[in-house]
View 1: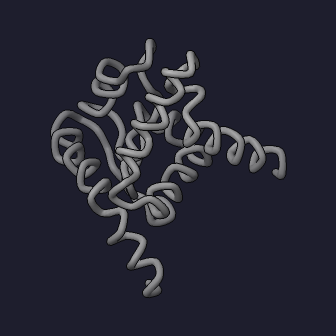
View 2: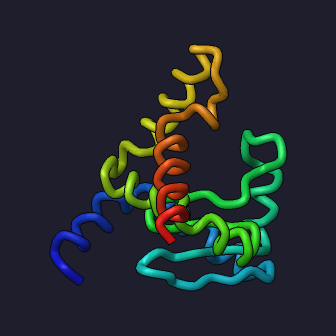
View 3: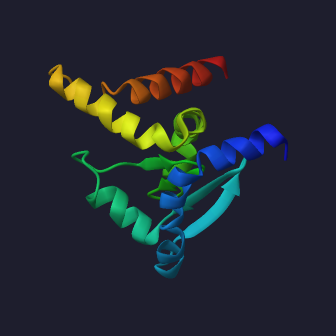
Length: 138
């Protein structure tokens, strides 16, 4: 591991630690975890329940990134959203411990402008655009 990569893991570690709280409960409730390209992906069990029922999205979330941890409802969701969620991993590497507050502020600003706090969040727009561009390049 390069020094730069180590720094990025450390810089984003406060957010990653939040994701790690899902590891044991998810494994104990039948879920799975694996490392893909340096990112821990956790799915199933408690994580599925959380993503379906405990997010602000009407139908829940398919996946969510917390630092170098990506939570997914199931393996299909992780596979389908991987390029989008990797943009969020890079955003976490850039913003470090300020990512979650910045994300929340971006949602609040969109809401105050009369826009959708999720769809019009600048971090989501960047992830959608970048993952869409990646799919077009394939």
